[in-house]
Length: 234
Image 1 (cartoon, rainbow, N blue to C red):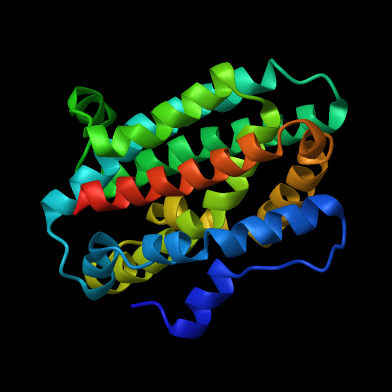
Image 2: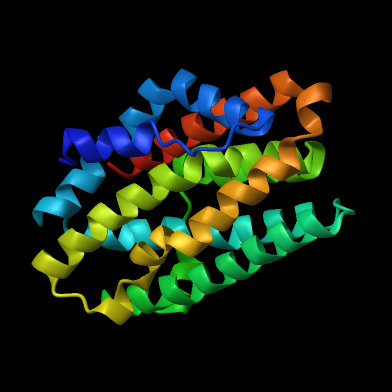
């Protein structure tokens, strides 16, 4: 399992900004801390970490992520069409490019475990796994860009933490090389995560006055669906 200290660092992540947006996000992280901690303790990640995952487990992960990354790529692109200010445009454009990179990285991982893109396309989605990107799509279609930003801010770091744990297990027990593990490691890039944090604070600043409850609900449901994804893989 992830050590208590490292787990706590993810769940209670802070920044030093005193802006209203920063306070809002930090308070929401505290409110969701038990749920976020649960995401970090799912059996699937533990099996990969310890080398107990089967080939079927790894294939299932790649198959479900293929549906999710393709869905999220379109969801963020849809959100991009709803923003007007340059700051938000820069943010969601970078997120689109990030998801596009993730798709290439996922295909490299899939190839390493013997899956072609054609096989991924023919695989069947698991409803509990697909729920996350479906919720994301609902936010992109009917919610606000600020709701999308909060959902991403509440889930990005715990998703990245689980991926990093998996990368250690895949490297140690399954012999995967660094170029085959980019899908799992690049989410922790400090420049990317800092960009996410800073831009999210700015994007939600005006929405804090008009839709604070909706922002909280977007974050809460995002973490709930993130947990459902990992539980559905088990």
